[in-house]
Length: 177
Image (cartoon, rainbow, N blue to C red; front, side, top):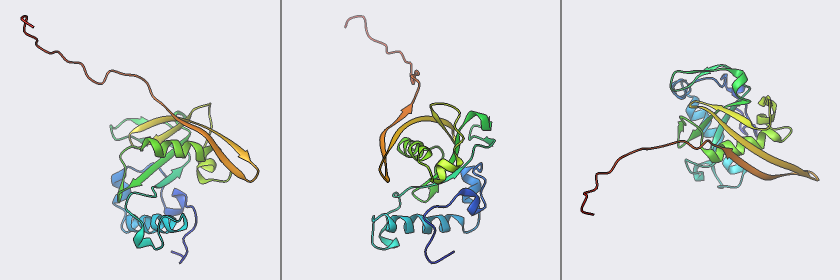
């Protein structure tokens, strides 16, 4: 690894396809330590600490980005490439996350819209929503950005969710109440 790590790194640069399960990524000898070194070096570059040792375990989050590809989610379902626009695997607290944090998904959505980012290079747009493939399936996000001179400005980032029943129950109430 170079003394100064690259500012960005695609999954393919690490020998990953972006379709691996969290357990498969964590089982690659030396990979998690390498990813943590990259994450900490990025944290120093972002000004989150003066040294890699000063960077905490949760920020910045590292995301492995890949173009859409067929993968098996944690429930055993096959997710086809046409069902998502970008594939990710997110690391947090020294582990590969089993899903994706919603704030991270929104950040990926914004990055997909910014020319020159790894997310934008991996992104295969199919509609207005940005469908993010992750180990637990797909999360749909939206992102509105604009260019202000040389700067990119994120106007909004949203998560699209469906309302669903999370619990049903019954409570026995005495008739005397």
